[in-house]
Image 1 (cartoon, rainbow, N blue to C red):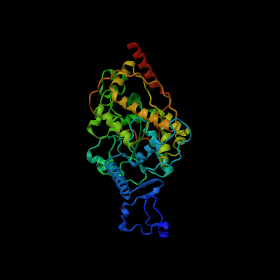
Image 2 (image 1 turned 120 degrees about the vertical axis):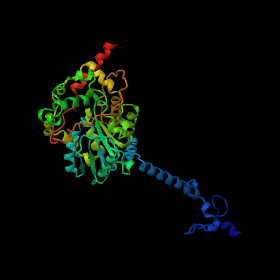
Image 3 (image 1 turned 60 degrees about the vertical axis):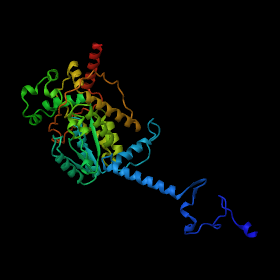
Image 4 (image 1 turned 180 degrees about the vertical axis):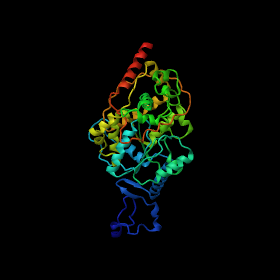
Length: 429
């Protein structure tokens, strides 16, 4: 009787096989240890079989994620960034930003769009690379954006073997590194209002900037005098090649890629460009809000862009900017502007999409956007599917000078063009 009274009872019923605690070696095999339920938390029990199932599921998930990235999925840095932004409580501008250090990407590509402030950014990068010690990789080829398959493979190979951390910059349409077995880098870029980009390019090719026409005559030696002084309205209204598609379908291919259809104005190129922006670009900024672009670049990529805004605002650099303002600019008539908007239907759809994404990103970090009334959009016709033009060879020369100061908040040509559009629309009503 005493032995039965001294026998300890197991909480689940029956006698406890180890009244003084389980042996160090675990349960004997004969007692079915793999089926024994192990209490980890109070009132929570699961079998080792359940534990094994959970571990197997986690392993499958990790392998699937690895396979997705090796097959061309977004870079790990972008996935971490999206999780970081998703957990942010900064949407409503309350409190300081989360104190978390983002991972440091060692491969960054700036496939800069022509006439979108790229010379300004490249000059800043030259200063920053010396200051922060990263490898700024540039190209001697300035006016070849579309590459053959072999050219893509060769360029990707050269970029991938550069000393890290590096930032590569060149006028080139989006390259898919993972397609050729390389690690997909983080992309950045800047675009601007499509009509303003076209007008800046039109007059810059003809007349250069305040440094004088001589330098630009060298860049366009084959341009005849009647072509150089061609009135912008005549060029647009008479449908000259320079003022019609394909040369107006210019920005989207930089984000769509190297596929031939990326150079055909249409929904396919537009949607592919949007997809690449979402999956492969850390930031696509708006030139009209360049200071905010630089602030976000400094926040996302401090190892590359720390202190960039103070350099940009330096009075000495501002003086250089005043010397590179495009001269002899004129504003097209309302009728001509209307036609440009019609021909740039897809360019504007992409521009407004990028602008909305950029403003959303600004709100996450508490930057106020000055939202103005969007311009009236006319009824667009579908442009003829043709190829895009190549940028003129003007970006790497005279690097000590800055691109024109087109990023001023109140651009006169843009404001006047939008005003004329509203007047024209009201007359039609």
